[in-house]
Length: 111
Image 1 (cartoon, rainbow, N blue to C red):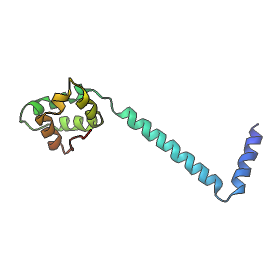
Image 2 (cartoon, helix red, strand yellow; image 1 turned 120 degrees about the vertical axis):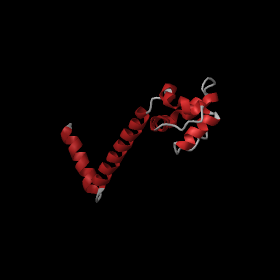
Image 3 (cartoon, rainbow, N blue to C red; image 1 turned 90 degrees about the vertical axis):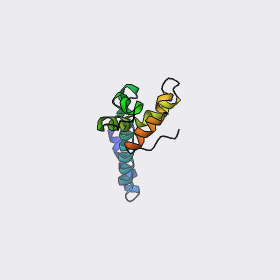
Image 4 (cartoon, rainbow, N blue to C red; image 1 turned 180 degrees about the horizontal axis):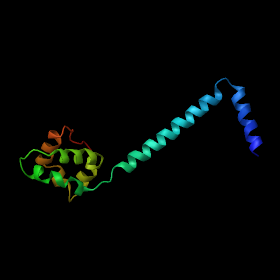
């Protein structure tokens, strides 16, 4: 059976100039995209508790710490979900949260 597959691959590869290299490149690119998408999906765990270093800055006029800004950047993909949550939306949509996002150099999400 392996011999049959090798013969078919040789036939495909030899029938067109560069055919094998194109197939290999397409397969490699597809594999890289799958790895990239799975890495992105696994990279962020949405947890509003992660934003606790920002609480003081959101509720007062104190500037956000570097830890706060780092957490906001990490949780950025989650912010629209937080905005839609009735328990969290009022905090994420507050003037203090907008000020923190601005101070951290992040645009406020448009969902």
